[in-house]
Length: 323
Image 1 (cartoon, rainbow, N blue to C red):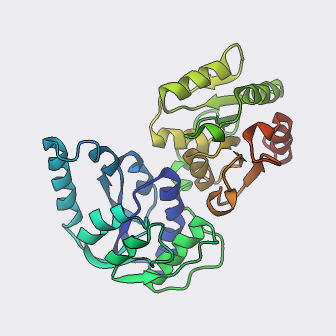
Image 2 (tube, rainbow, N blue to C red):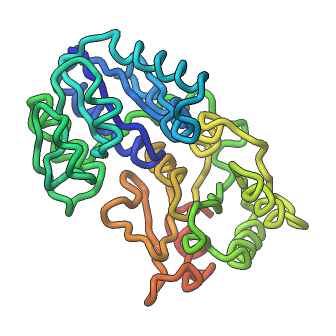
């Protein structure tokens, strides 16, 4: 049985889809998946043993110059790949008009997706052969697991979902595995950032206890923040520019992780590493860290990141055995 997954972005959403593949593989051992995903996240599906082929798409980049000659050529190549296979089922787990109209509609096979009341953009449901109603009051991982179960004809397991990618990195851990913490300090929204002074206090506290800290980054702004946090401090390493797989390797070897609400926090959860995620204005109940060893500290009472004290994080790190 060959199935096409349409789940293009964001990083957290792509990662949240992985447990559904594990469910499907357990119920249908012969099943194989192809996956349409934004080019920046194309490494993620390759980590799961049930995925045969990744079809990168670049809608985010294409829409800036939609009619330029080279972009039109890229789109033609993408659609050639998309239509080269007839699928037993196509599951649009994105639930957006652009995914349904630009990708799912043009793929070959029976199309499955969320119904009018369940999709993030209701009009997307017009392009599906079969639609399913899912409660919005459940974690995103469970919602996708339910969609796959309905689409492929099995009962959704009641056990916690398994991302099944941690083992991909076990054979290539860093030499200093389990001897460092990773602090994920970067996120996209200003109100989701933890103050630099708080990060500095936490770094000073954990390094005073003999633990080293690694700081990844993905943009020039994030690099400059990492440099400021590390300046004048021993046992703090600003990592070089890394691919997503290389970041995952560093996370997989960490003794523990402290993160803000960001895609790499979901990657940490998928790798089964102890992770304390700091939340301010966003709600962790429906899209927070899902999996083993995931912990939440939320700013109280007003939901501000500045309300989270470094001592709270330090105490939690100590209580879960990371110090």
